[in-house]
Length: 409
Image (tube, rainbow, N blue to C red):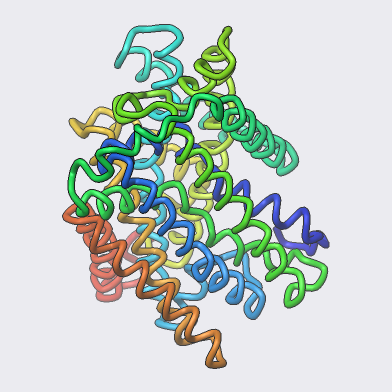
């Protein structure tokens, strides 16, 4: 956005919640339980606690340096254009890799209703990604108001799910608490980064508030509280109500509603999951396709391939199809994507340590930096992909710097 829209605290908090409370929650409780059992609740709590300093750090950057470029802008200010390009690459190439993961979450709900297993999930992917591609090709984007409505719908569904499942909670489902050992908590935390990606959106929104220095902290506090309560409530109810069955579930929210309400709730949750995922994929396609053009404009990507919005969009679309055909299980694909998001956070919080002033600001940014570095380590070998992508950006710029200007840009 180029002009101030005078966001209120309530509107800003709603948009921030919408940026974070995304598609992951519809399947993350099951993936985390598969990695750590009931001890996955510890990982959920740890990520919620981490959200506070991380969200505050990006909000502080946005309030001090309002710019829609977000983390890439701050990385450039702190470390120069090459690091900014590395951040851009890492985010840009994570989008086609993450699209199959996001749609796979929804595909589990659709196949739960229609059957067909993997074939139904693949068809769901083609429909959602293809629709998002066509919408962006013609410049049609789901409006911000519709995106907020979708987020509110999801939050409402989560509240209803929790309330419906309360009578079916069983404390016996907490034992054995850590069937995969305490190392499973770290594995679950690495996966859960997917559900907490989006706090960097706070920095991009800051320039739109009526009074950024006053309103951004308030909106951030509300967003962190809402996201934290909803995430922990759904995770706890999932573990206590579904027990061991949670780890193998492809549609945990549908399972919770089924035991709580009965009736055709699986169809309803599948429809909501599809609409929500379409909105998320559409937003990421819209933003990342323009990011590709911006990177090409700065010489960080080849202009012939990425220098026009439709070309950049087509690359993301085709790369997403290629990624869904890779022989990767959902767990590994999710870790590869969260590794990229985590590296973006590492660089963003490192930039905050250099750009923010004051003892308190540095302490909070330092806490966030240490936490995301730990998460990158917990991500394990899949995190190497993010380093390869960032390294590729640096190599490309070095090679390009040695070429004459007339070499085909």
